[in-house]
Image (cartoon, rainbow, N blue to C red; front, side, top):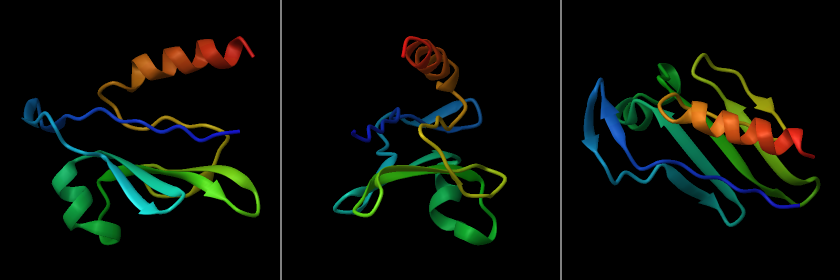
Length: 104
């Protein structure tokens, strides 16, 4: 089993695309990555006290193998077999994953 994560590269401020080449994947550890979505400046500066970004933390844990955790905008921590976060392009990804999971 493997863990695959991905993200688009656009950062938006309202309807304005502020940056087309943002890296939304953060290398946390040798086998752990964080994928963030939402308001980029808020995700980087406000942190845990006032989160306005969702995150997916995924990687390989020695004890249990592949792991995916969803930390949605409203807080919480959910371990899931797979997850999708974000808003702008997520409907396309949901459709693809629904088709992929339905064929298994």
